[in-house]
Image (cartoon, rainbow, N blue to C red):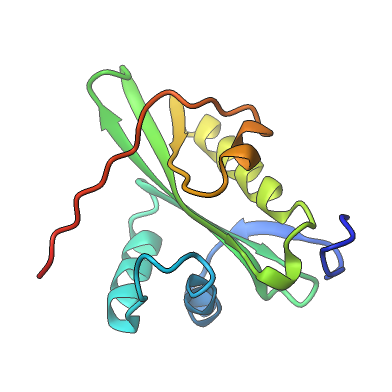
Length: 152
């Protein structure tokens, strides 16, 4: 464990459950400042991810008390050009107090394992501040990421 991380005991990667909703919502505030999480929208999306597990991978890294210290949300879709399914790691957050403990790497590895088990042909991730983290896990930049936001 890195010196900057807090020792939380053994970490277990598991599928998220409805009981994790409050903790995961709390972690959203650490994701960035692009969006302000709204609880009703989160609750709808969280329930959808749990209900539609065929096209979502929602994993948590849980500490010894089984409380999530981080999570990763991945979507899976069948695209034309990949000749099969593809996945995109949409969100990954590790609690600030637990960063530097390789929890993020463990979450990415677990997402990769789940994607392989489902026959996914590629896993992509868009990153604003963490390109070096993903490059350290053998990801390579292959495209620009562009975004257009639609207001209500």
